[in-house]
Image (cartoon, rainbow, N blue to C red):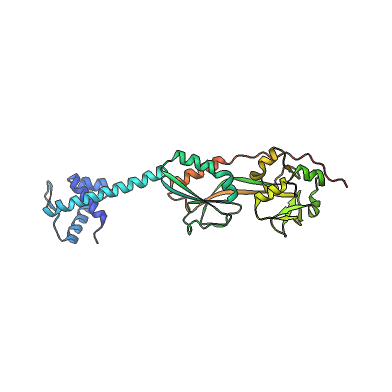
Length: 300
């Protein structure tokens, strides 16, 4: 089979008019260049070049062959340049997976800014509360919260997401501020009937008055006075700021989970992935601990 590399070499020899200059341009020796052209002629069964000590001259077959080889060499150069441009400037579709809550709350402004900066790029967001398989599902990167258990992935830490125990002022006014030991008998909003919470170094198996599988519903139920919920700060931030919710058990988070951007390989990382992850990293801001609510503890 004829090697495209030898066809490119032939085009370079003709263009430069010299084995020496063509070999130098391609980073090989003159002898190697001469041997490869000789092998190419042997494979084709025709003489492409007439060689003398002073000059090279194409045969009739060589002239016809050169036109095709020069076109192929130009296409290869164009393909290489296009790939390099894509590496320098984000081009094409970027597929990103994210947990639904994080995606709904944070990703829209990041995507808007990214697409504004790089008009040749496009983005597909896959919002799902499940562990996606990047390779199998054809994803460029994913945002994950918690432990990374796949050593084949590159993980870049974006920040830490705290969760807090919260309740509404109305609930606290009616039931008082519980101690950590009193969570067992408190009206709690959980995600499982068999959930264990830890507050002030006390672990308690709660008995939820409401069990839900959606964090936003849990937060809204807490705002409505149903009970005590343990929810991420990004979800309850506004309600804490405007007083619809109060933090229980001091400013220390109930949970602190690390946020990562993960992607399959660091080798030749496409610019669209690198720049999007950079944008995610700048989005993560330090969060000041919320102030503890002013509700009083239950009298004993």
